Image (cartoon, rainbow, N blue to C red; front, side, top):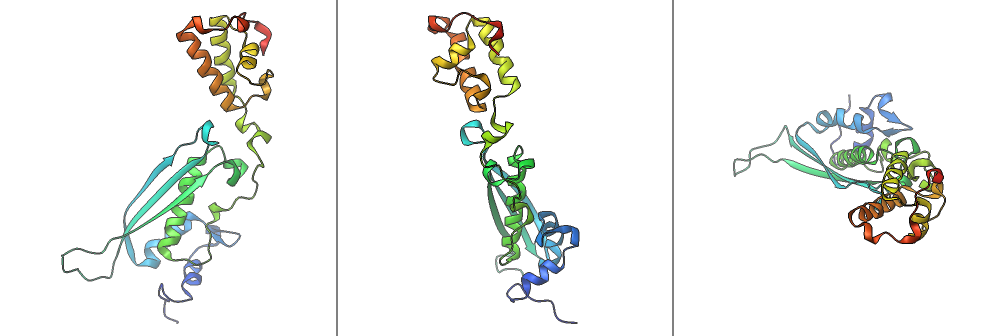
Length: 224
């Protein structure tokens, strides 16, 4: 039986990957779940703490982009006490940025969750010192060319209903309001960000009705 390679040996990466089960690999790439399962064993350590920080939350203004940092601290099991009476705890971090352009279609409405998993995978890979290995969750098979190609960025039903309520209350013609704002007068050409802007504008009119231009007054039921 050959000796277990050390983290400095060229065979180390192959050894780590060999500890994974078949269902913990996708097209040869390790899953984050798999790396997490084997981590303490192959590193002969104890995980002390792990944490996630959302550095950027998704919003219409940032193209629904999420940025997450994952931190992992662990203590090797075999080590001598330092002269200060402390044990050496190691800390690694990984960061991931996820938006519609680098995420599979089926997951792109959950950018924070995807970014968290990717960030953890990167932290584990860094701690394990794996070479030329990418976690399975970092790969994307089907990426939409642009969010406008799907309903993910379109104005939502909730936004439309809220616009309708505000416009009716303020006696505003929504279509004329869109034109006055320099937007498309076709409701279904508007995107989520446009919806946010329209609601913000209508809300400001609600605070000061004297600011409503005469040219957009006159609510019409069939505007949708």
